[in-house]
Amino acid sequence: MKKTTYFLQAAAFAALFLLPSLLLSWGFWAHKAITRQAISVLPAEAKAFFVEHADSISEKSIDPDLWRRHDDKEGNRHFIDIDNYGAYPFADLPRDYNAAVDKYGEEQVYKMGIVPWRVAEMMDSLTTAMKARDKKLMIRYTTAVAHYVEDIHMPLHTVVNYDGQLSGNKGIHSRYERWMLEAHPEDVLASIQPNTPQYIDNARDAAFAWVLDSFIWADNLLHADSHAKVPGKSYSSREDYDSDYYAKLYQNTRAFTGLQLSKAATATASCWLTAWVNAGKPDLSGL
Image (cartoon, rainbow, N blue to C red; front, side, top):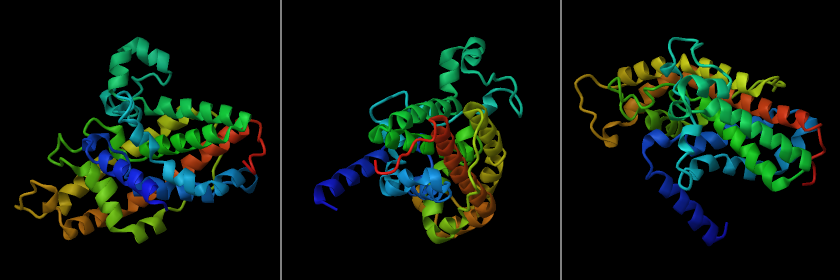
């Protein structure tokens, strides 16, 4: 890799960590791992483009996190605080965006996050790019779809208490999705076992279903964090969370973490497959 390229990537990487933890999604490493696994389960007839550009697609799966630096509206496209809308399964919130805005106002809907609608929007854009066989736009929207779908499968992207700030678990967002996962890379990678992707009839409704599925694990994650801490010990800085803490946190969350990572990869592949089918199954090889 050329030194200039390395420097620019390193600078972008460092700059992102200056953002507040609430703005982060699955860590860079996790997004790339999930995306690669999604590519691996695509059917042969739809796979050529994704395999040929696997490195670029994987690397760029973090791009929507970088877009936040240039677009102050980007952050709210990565989550939805679904528990702001009554009780599970949150039927108070219309799944149609315009109906939701009519009921709550656009400002409130945006404030609570719009990721399910963003997924549907990006899938439409990917379909259009595939129809045109536009390589640049295909990579852009392939990675955007991956990122937002994967974010939905991180439980804390579905709740008001996104960083444990309301329950004595402040900082759990980055401890879980970045530091814990990166402390156990081999085991985490082995746990990502996506299923065969399926065609999605309605992207928006599918995204909301993933939100509800992810939401049920949020409390489990917060409890796992509490149980991983040593009673009576002060946890006032990141350095207070040692390897024993992360080992316990991983032990406490390992099962549903692997499940969510696997579901994220399956859902990502399903979205790509659906966009390709909706585009008329174009031959994308050789682009």
